[in-house]
Amino acid sequence: GESVGLHLPTLSVQEGDNSIINCAYSNSASDYFIWYKQESGKGPQFIIDIRSNMDKRQGQRVTVLLNKTVKHLSLQIAATQPGDSAVYFCAENNNAGNMLTFGGGTRLMVKP
Amino acid sequence: EAQVTQNPRYLITVTGKKLTVTCSQNMNHEYMSWYRQDPGLGLRQIYYSMNVEATDKGDVPEGYKVSRKEKRNFPLILESPSPNQTSLYFCASKKGGGTDTQYFGPGTRLTVL
Image (tube, rainbow over all chains, first blue to last red; front, side, top):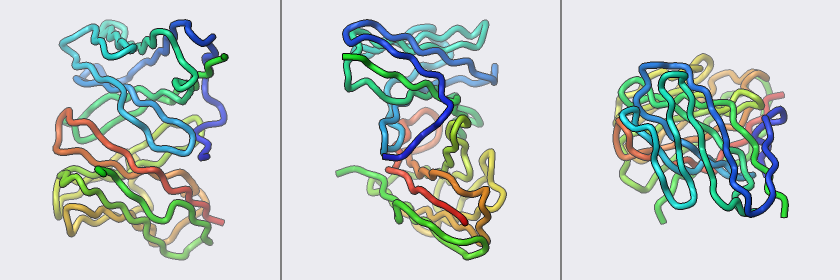
């Protein structure tokens, strides 16, 4: 598969544990944020999003938290599974939705 | 099946030899975009297009051209590739502007010698 990054921060968790992946964004004017999952050899896949007028949003096994004061975003994955192993990127939406700025990514490794 | 396709998936070329990477989507999306992905830098936007005949620069447009003559296709053109354009390229599309979900293609690994 394609290598997506040789120097990514790595989070290693035990199967069944909860995972928390963090992201700092740069533009205080950004109004929409997205988390993507990228598996080896594939393009990024949408996981969950959140608008700037919210501070928490929940999906299936995933929760995104937004702290606009410190420009911080986190992705929480409950009961992490081997299939969750991937690189996770946060992205902020700029220019009225026309441009996405991605963070550097975090590699999640799930130990059986 | 709704998808974004890219061709070729892998390409090795030499400096200065013009190349085109094609991108096509079958979802009738108005918005399309190109990104490059490099180790430690995440994905960076090269160009985007809001609709046919409407293209705009992203964060790293230097050395690239695009065209949008048809809604479904958004080719990326490297007129004179250089080694610093060796990268993994992704095409993406979404229904419109704003907060619509963006769908990514499988990627094209380009090596410029």
